[in-house]
Image (cartoon, rainbow, N blue to C red; front, side):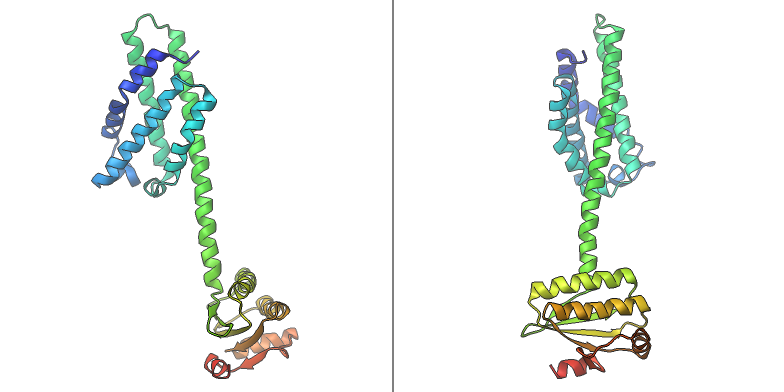
Length: 275
């Protein structure tokens, strides 16, 4: 049985010492991110986070495993989403978890030396549980970090998707879609999906699609743009196409794409003048 009230109280009494000793022993010339910071506020926050860790981890000797991790989880999520830790390479964070683990081995050894009645089997049991639960904490931290990074990535991707097809509201339910740069198949698909959503969201009845900023598109992308115009027609959005370069026009002809239901204008200025 690894629970021990005396060990629990001993570690709790030394929780601040654990934090101060840990911070003093960080090799600041051989680390990065939050651990190498000289900012007093960052250091203060880091020490508080570490001390909070100890207050949770010490409960290992006072609580059952399920309750222990249930109470620990908010700390794990907080650190996984902390900007200073996000900007710290993961290997350095894991290294510090291991350094803290070694601190606990040291303090258990001290406690055993102060209490000669403690058996070697008891010490081994404490070592085993520290090793086991610290590994579980590290695993949960890595999982939480991954989940948070995926959440951020999805949010960034949503922003990128919106910027890839920026539907700009003009007036009287009219909108403008200026396409700029290279368009590959993946971006063309994004443009199709996002434009339909934006037109519906902004209640656009007439969309001006300008291709003057697009130098080249392949046959697949030309087909995707044609699909976009058809899809817009199906949801009741009238389209005016402007800025078609000769190369794009040639590709459209080769594909046999028909723009008979789409207004064509030489330039965006001409299209807007006639709106």
